Picture (cartoon, one colour):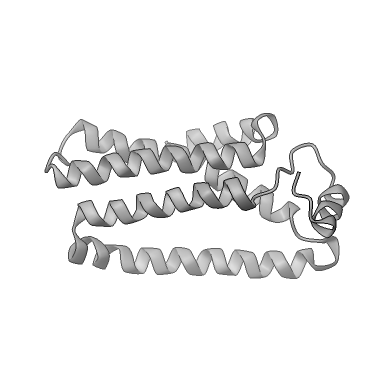
Length: 156
């Protein structure tokens, strides 16, 4: 699913736009993770509904969040600091991945599945809000146009 939907995202990113795709992905992940949380609370995590929720979460991430992150982070930094800024951004991304992978099993054991996935759903919803409020649309713009929009304070 991850590989298939990554190709979907790569093909859709220039048509749909970065911001729109990021918002679709975070909304889809929020819904699927909220459903998974409810499934844990209702003790129906065995079977097809829970598996589908996990697959849908992976599909929305792979088709939207994953490709948009890599494209957007390479576009939003000014030319003069792009190499260094991307290095810092990529390091922070992998560090955050490490922390999540390290802590999630503990969270799952200590909080239980319902609360753990509710927390992740909340984080996905906050990601949607961040995309809505703070992510600029860079579709169809040159790197110079994007840099100029940051300098003037316009994210459109």
